Length: 204
Image 1 (cartoon, rainbow, N blue to C red):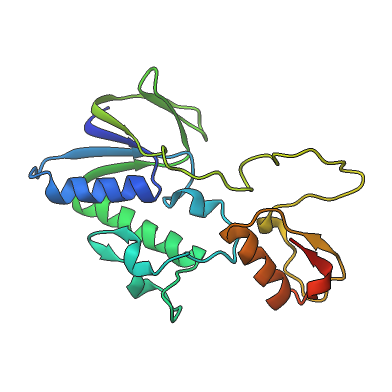
Image 2 (tube, one colour; image 1 turned 90 degrees about the horizontal axis):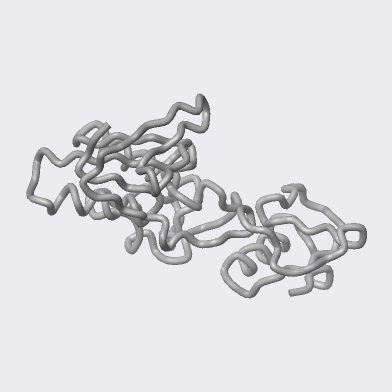
């Protein structure tokens, strides 16, 4: 297979790059191949916890040619995980149907050989690409995909990610939330508002 651009990563950065490239390259015959280890476009949003929302207004997120704010129901335009994933699926469909773009999900890319392996049937594709773009450079580390950066005794404490919180109100468990970023704050709000955990049962 051959292409002008091979983009590794179909997350926010990769999708924005492709959109800008297609709109402003001045070439109507531009060929692009997109590969990603995940099944759907959207990058780390595929791995995120279900109650996550965009930490900014949707007007500041997404690609140039398709607005995200029109797809969200939140009054403050903080799009949900599902809304963002649906949005990026629509963007990728537009790329594939309107331009010379091919999307290969669920593959493992090898930069040394410029080839990728289908994770399902293990078929190997060698690619002759004019330019290879690594769009994973700004991919964040999230609790679902990285191990805890601290030691703990699994016989004394159960360590889970926000995505693994059982969505059932009325729990009497006590929780210690590690991390003071947006994920930690989202988790505390979810514990109190959705699961009904009293503040005295939450340490931060």
